[in-house]
Length: 133
Image 1 (cartoon, rainbow, N blue to C red):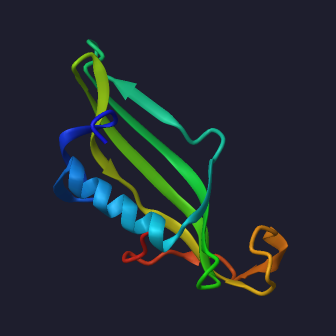
Image 2 (image 1 turned 60 degrees about the vertical axis):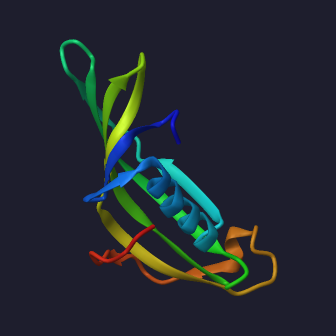
Image 3 (image 1 turned 30 degrees about the vertical axis):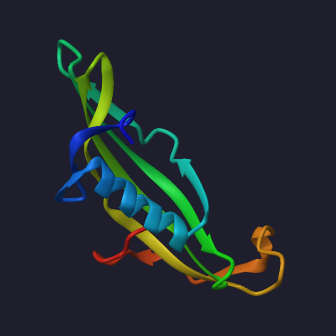
């Protein structure tokens, strides 16, 4: 985490330490251990200060997250917004945020979870504010 995140991070609206961000990401990986992400082409936007000490990156990402043991999953589309600051000659994340745009619930209908055709997902609908991918 030290390599990628600043010592204090505004993480989805909450001030957190690197350890707290790591704890949250670890929880999400345990909850959804199988994940697929794709950046939507043409959705990446970057801007940096003149001295390149600060940068802002935004993008839209398609995702599918699954928990084969629970036979459940979610898929959808979300924004990702990162603010980076130069520290020790390296860019580090000082703010991470995003908004879920679309969401579908998924169920595993056959034993082999690796086959995408074995997952049935509801129609995509606008995501609710409390959804976390």
